Image (tube, rainbow, N blue to C red; front, side):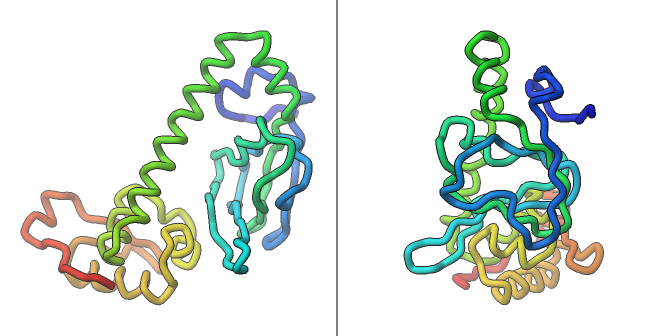
Length: 206
């Protein structure tokens, strides 16, 4: 079966791809399971979650249709987190050995992999920058501008390190101040900078 996976993985043979159908709430793999490869989401959404020693659940990444996740598993013996379907999800597992063997023999493929991972590192640094913003309103506004509200608000709140209540309060305040508009239930988008130039985000330490 042919899968429309992103470059450079589309150069791999068909037997490198393994189809998975996962119901909402079920796991694709668990922390410390032996690694078998990374994943590409065909439909639905999945989260990478890790539990701290204190029992707190942290969302490391949320992948939607057309995105990959668990790339670090290519270079590890065991998965470092859980992968959980947050909706009914179809995904393709890209075989770890197939990727590594191709990298050993194809310099161009290896360079493309490196460039892809570099872009992901940049995105990760942006998330760290966002999480260091103390104001809930400013953090929510930055996250909306970066297009991070791809699912529901509850998942969005977890992704940006806020409680559900604080996120809803921030969204309501941003809508009232005219810098964000509500387009549908649970859907928000920021206005352009030209529109909000006369409506600064109110200061908040919440």
